Length: 117
Image (cartoon, rainbow, N blue to C red; front, side, top):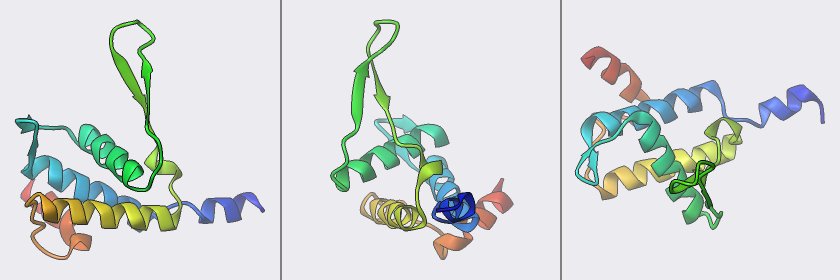
């Protein structure tokens, strides 16, 4: 497999933009555990939940400084096109279940959130 073929298996730019737009919309319009969370926190929460739904393990390790635990997570930048599509579907299903309403077709969320900013 050539390096170019390897890269083509990764998520597309369009999928990446949609992924981040959906997560940003959720972060702007939904609270978790009693307060608003950052885009980074939402990305991790949604990705961990998706991994568990797929039967993938999420690893918790003792923190290097000995204070608590840290989660070793899967980077979304390494998702394949199919995995990213599955994660996008999972996020939309999660949002529907928890009452997060996207104003229009999710592919258009990015432009709406930019206009509202």
